[in-house]
Length: 115
Length: 106
Image (tube, rainbow over all chains, first blue to last red):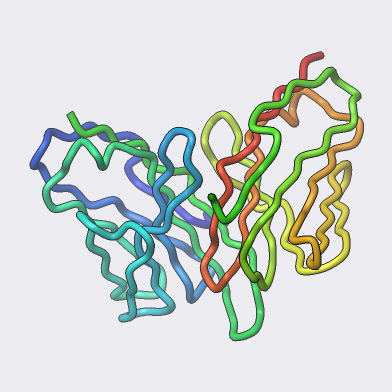
């Protein structure tokens, strides 16, 4: 089982460039999440999705966009890269049900540097 | 004040020692998660609990809902336990602590 797969693992961008971080899960999970992890800080939620066609903002959505056209895929788009977006990005998924918590499954992360 | 506080921030131990990592939170939660992040960066869910105690191998997690406090214990610690341990509370979305960096030396 692949679980949650993120690509690329590393990327260096110049200020103003755009890119898409890919995330795919093969567990048929309904919920998917994008987090960023900055040094000394807890993970922060960027965007999440409760199912195909539905996305919503998290705590730090500015500068990012997402889409969820299929259950499996949840790409994160940076349109105009800024140095403040240098971070490690994690995608996660869970099989969350109403009144039922489930653990989240994380990808291996994408380390992104904006120079 | 952060909604989720972990202590200590850093912890070193000799192989075989008993380890305790603490997590306090200030919000109402439906569950609490303990996660492990290895030096390579990957994050793995260790426990999800909403009451009492759970055990998996040498790891034990406890939670006291009234006191809004959870602990993660590692018995007979081993160098392979070296990692960052992260507490996260579930309030419909996860709110994460900043992690406890554990190093276990042989």
